[in-house]
Length: 308
Image 1 (cartoon, rainbow, N blue to C red):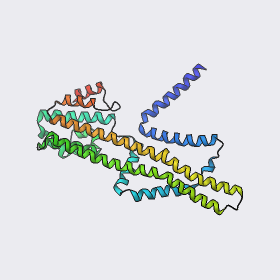
Image 2 (cartoon, rainbow, N blue to C red):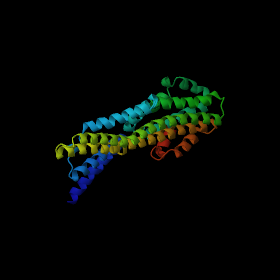
Image 3 (cartoon, rainbow, N blue to C red):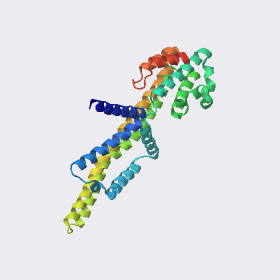
Image 4 (cartoon, one colour):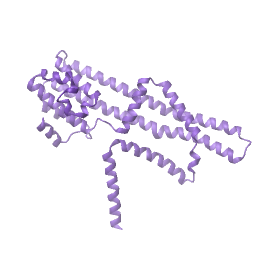
């Protein structure tokens, strides 16, 4: 018996470790499965029949109304950003530990080059980063145009020499604020749609009651079926709102926070270099400001300094 328990625990631990390695995407899927499984499982345990919840007309009424209202409410740019954000929520945040490690390596190499050869040595890399021998070493940076544009723009502000550190900080913080505002707009649109879903569920329920009234002189079984279909409308509206769209809006908000934190890390690095800090001291200080989940270990930091 003990041996059997140990084997079962080993299997569970192995599954958990595999899920963790798959990252955020798997947790989103698992969360959705838990929501569906808990609701349907509890329903069937209480004696409910699964087919009693299958009413395509309710889905069309609620889903179609919510989609139409979202289109009416949301500008095209925000809709596109929201779709990208939802896809990104399944992929997981790109602003993870591997990206931070690459960023530290890239900045350390550029800072050492700037101190050793002068800021003019950056020109070829900043003017054409896609052909840069430095940026090509770091695919997570080179293949993310938002990161690449922000980093090269921040470093270019230093090479120009026409702006003070305070002015550069203001410019970069303004750019980050615009990113935050755009991200918040997508979160707001999704949140408002989630808030509207219970209302559309009530609309579907009222329509179901209207249909029931038309059949009130019919058999009791038919009336019960139609009343059940009407109540399913309310159920679906609430479930979609609080079980799916609301949590997805929250997840988008956390992804936006991770994005802002990453770009502020680059900002702090550039300002530290502009203020005359040594490359090693700047990168070491940056590490302290990174959340523990993304913070490079001391061994990784030593490797960065050794390879750089």
